[in-house]
Image 1 (cartoon, helix red, strand yellow):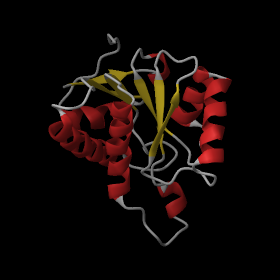
Image 2: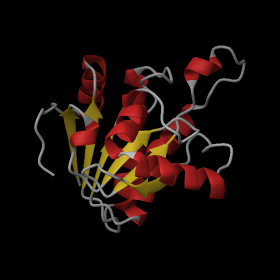
Image 3: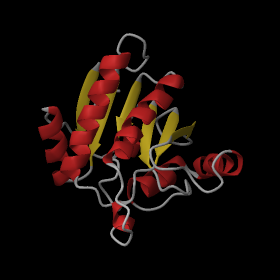
Image 4: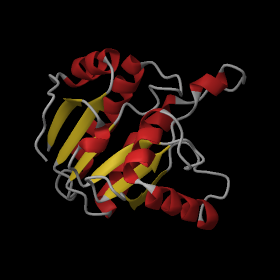
Length: 188
């Protein structure tokens, strides 16, 4: 299993599956979610609306992952997962459990593997508008991905995981947690 760190735009990667740090509504939003929806085109929104209509009428619960076709992206699939929203939690006395963020990474890998993905690109799930500290996201991602790889390395079609950093802070956190150096050009 190869794990790489890429500094750039996740929507430009030629991979089998791109993980979307989605809003629970699945209807797009800001940050990476908005960028993925914009780059993928209207078919992605239509597929997300179908998931809302048939499976999750109130949106996807945090930690769950679902897949749609990738529309105009250079990928086959978009795997949508919603992190617990810490930005909302500041007004709510119930604190989100970091285990749910772990579930975002693990469940995204399971969904990608079920769709026969060989390569998967991950953003720093939760580290944008949802308020998670990039260092904590990187640590959780490292533990979750390492555990999943160790458990599934002989049975999974996934052979490459690309972590995508969109800021200096996220890049530094991923570099530290995974002992990787970022690249700005990556082969599929």
